[in-house]
Structures are given as C-alpha cells and as structure tokens.
Image 1 (cartoon, rainbow, N blue to C red):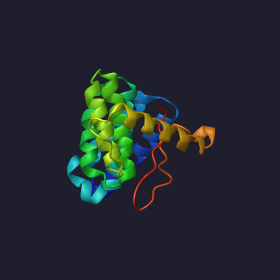
Image 2 (tube, rainbow, N blue to C red):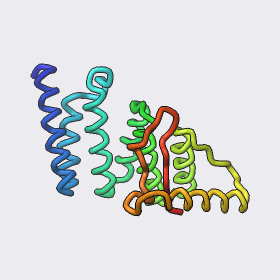
Image 3 (cartoon, rainbow, N blue to C red):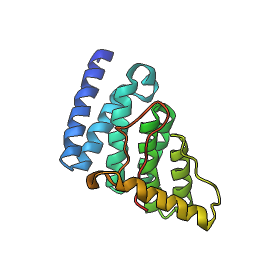
Length: 171
C-alpha cells in the first residue's frame, strides 16, 4: 500500500478508536489505535505528528483503563518526548501521576506531579514547611471558590495563556 493509503487507513482507525473510547469499549479502542500506529510507524513524527499523537494518547488511555499499566506508562513517556504544548504535557503528567499511584509508586507520583506543574511555570518547594503547606492549601481552596462547582478540581486547559495554564486541584 502507498503512504497515502496507510495515512487514510490510520485516520479511519483513529475514528474507530475514538468511537470505541467514547462508548467505553477500551479493548477495541486499544486495538484500533494500535492498528493505526502500526500503519504509520514511529519514525514519521515529522510528517504525521498530530495523527500519531492522537493515536498514542487513545492507546495509552485505553491501556491504562484496561489495567495494563506498564504498557500505558511506556506510551506516555514516549509521548512526552513528542508533545510540545504545556497543556498537553500537563495532561500527560496528570495521568502519569494516577498511573504511578495505582502502581504503588507514591514518591514517583509526587515527583511526576511536581515536574508536570513545572512545565506550566508552577514551582513547588522541595521540602515545604507546615506553614507553607497550609498557605498553599488555603490559597487553592480560595481559588476554587471562584469557580463554578462543576469546574472545581479539574485541570483548566481551556484557559491556556501564553505564560501558564491554571491548575486547580482539590486538596
């Protein structure tokens, strides 16, 4: 098959993977995204970057939901090398925090969260004192009160500015 045919087939696999994921049929989402990735190959990031990114994100998410944490983690780590947007990197780090937590690697979860926040310019102190932690917690709670209840505790990616993404978490 020609490169154009492989790209069209990969796009069809992406559509099928999205539909499967939206229907919570994660084994099929994993299958279709893997098929799309197989058609494109990993060496074509310059040509098919957006399509590869979307297929890999669906594949990693599906593997995570299916409990195949090692495979999901490997895909997320690879994605970090190819994703440029701070908002997208933050979302990947957020899922990797959950992944590390599910695997019982709590120190790594904290480290990943700290690195993820640093990608958007939010620096956390390495060893904050109790007073600093209390201040950060109260500031976070105060910021959340300014948000509608359905948006509290969510990563606010739609408010990306040139300088940073606002992150609100429930403490």
